[in-house]
Length: 249
Image (cartoon, rainbow, N blue to C red):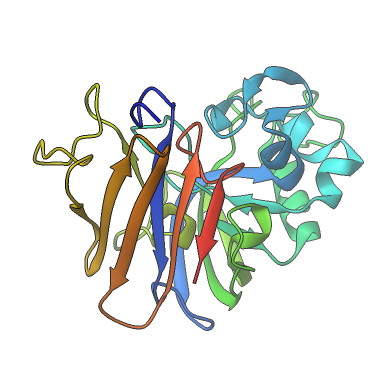
């Protein structure tokens, strides 16, 4: 490994602390997507459009008309990562029927099979919603669709409503991507991380130390967290958690 950058490697680290617990009341404003379009990375009616990069292009037709999309379930996305340009995964809904029936009343009539909203300004695509609900189950520890917490007793409102306080940060949005800033393996303070262990605080209390072993093509790491948590370190070719390789402990 000549350098992290030349290897096109992105390092991310995640600590899933008790940011959300079962029983917590959460609020978030984000785009509603189906699990299929998230997993495959594109929309059925726009296969050249990345679903997590441009969720605002997700048509109501694609959202609720295809049976396979309905069967895959729905979730509200978290915010866009300004570094990767991708939205992180947020919270799943425990009741698909409720989501579909509401979507029918939001989407513009005639632009999806079952949409009923006759307002000429009703949206054709990009369901931005403010969601409130109770966490009924946590994710399975993965970085995909099933890794997101599940919401019960949820309410889906127009995105313009917003949350009274700051949006809840979904667990999968707490990963911080670290791209090699220069030509070589340099730390945040321009330390030479091929000669010494470099350190970076990924989130409060979560410290990662690492050293690039260029001759061996390996990286030595030590992750520590001051508290009770699951800790993970992983690699991704695009800075995203989906499709990455990670160690969780």
